[in-house]
Image 1: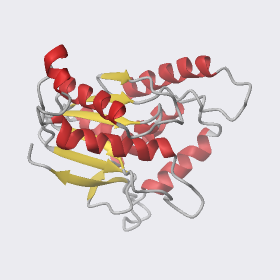
Image 2: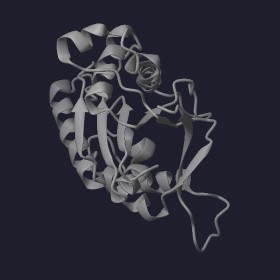
Image 3: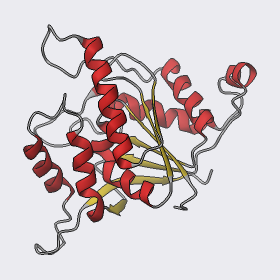
Image 4: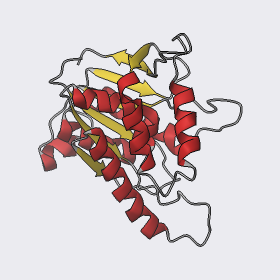
Length: 236
């Protein structure tokens, strides 16, 4: 990946970028890449309490996400304002993502794996995560790069087609790319701590993140931390 390349991270909720790829984002930003986020919701259902003020929560989570992104070096964050918990990979969502792809014109897009229903035996992957990955991949190919798709984006908004060169799919069971982020794991954890509405036990979170990212082949006295992706090279 060239330092001049522009990266767009498209995921469902505030805190998703930090969990899925925060250390990689920090590394890319330090290497001079321009990284932007596009979040499909504001996370307004990120509380189990039926009496929760969902509008206040959404505002809080937006602030948390912007602070975390700034800490990693991200240039800006766009929210598409779809309702949390109700994402569906339909044509309306696909068009919204195509619009952002054509506006930002990234060479690289990061999203998550729509096929990963149960990452392990204790967790069901959030349906919004799967919908976000599904809609984003459909937006990348063929819609973003082909003029006959959503021609109104050209006619009404002047957004010409744009082809994506590379996709990094996070949260996959079948990674083919490993990014060494040993030098950036602390910054990822620091960014996650900024999501105070979601992180109930910061120390437990930090321990869990380190355990998940540990390269078990590395020596105990020099642990190596990685983030794993399925990388698609589309040519662009």
